[in-house]
Length: 389
Ligand SMILES: Nc1ncnc2c1ncn2[C@@H]1O[C@H](COP(=O)(O)OP(=O)(O)OP(=O)(O)O)[C@@H](O)[C@H]1O
Ligand SMILES: [Mg+2]
Image (cartoon, rainbow, N blue to C red; front, side, top):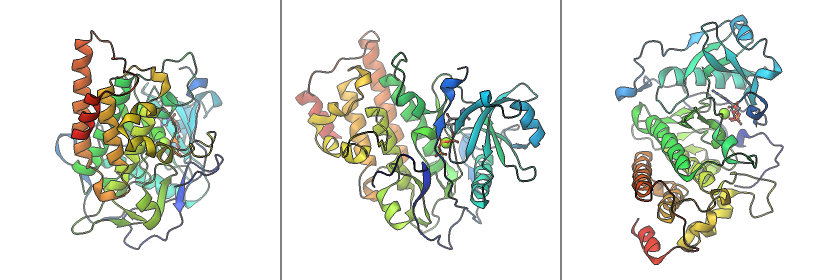
């Protein structure tokens, strides 16, 4: 991975790679610079049937995406007025709106610039019509009037994780360690649903902090399923596809070979964990050479447990448990293994992170709700703990 111009599209072909005929969903390449406007406003084709297993299954009535007319959505957004604009990404512009029923929604309008975005639109509608989980954003409806392509989602009042993690205003409270852990657990549960409960499994392919949206209580939900693919079935170990994703989050073996596996998502999850721990962006071209690619920058720290503390976001001002940090960094390092087969499965990651959260809670209650200030460098006892992992 290398750093590309900051003017480059955020999500795009990571490398040109011909689609294999076995591709089972529709790929696309869209361009655009994602930008958050929250601060300006008030506040594959497959013969199998894709469905969720267990209690998260799409059986609930009223959870089915409905069709809207363009007029409905123009009224909801007061004619897509500038003041309703809440964000902009590769797909198009996102507006806050109010439906006739009174429900507040986020409406994403596709840039009308060709077929590929349309294909991504179809995959998004299909995926989100069939998959339902508390940690996946809910698709309320869509509009396909004439050339128009719009998606209507539940409104996520706190915007994206990216917005809360990077370049935050000095007067804004940074995310606490426990909130970061809670967000990591929620995102991992969403991914666990896609990998382990959807049938056949779904490879998300676009896990990044701008696609993790937050509700009022900072519960995370994964969004943007236009790049998602049905995972390998039977004896197949991978799906071959054109390489798509976002620089800085894309697994090295997938970028090199186009062979997509569930472990590609685990790598991207590792990058998000690293962003949560460090408060640094996956790719940041404003940093000096050597620090622009977060994974490359972090490697020397990840290899040496005595340096784990140096990874931590300075905005946390030491308010975290060193023991918890050591475990979280160990999980991150495992997700970022160069060799995909060495990366853990998402259900094991969920268990590990939930354990960490429960430990943090019991240590919080023992400390009367206070976080533990770490010693200047990790104690031998902490180091031993990481060794035990
Ligand atoms: N359901 C939603 N509720 C509230 N805000 C949203 C919602 N969906 C998107 N947004 C806002 O719009 C922004 C742009 O989202 P979008 O998915 O179009 O682009 P992106 O994820 O930032 O970038 P890219 O297109 O490269 O993936 C998000 O960062 C978020 O701030
Ligand atoms: Mg997005």
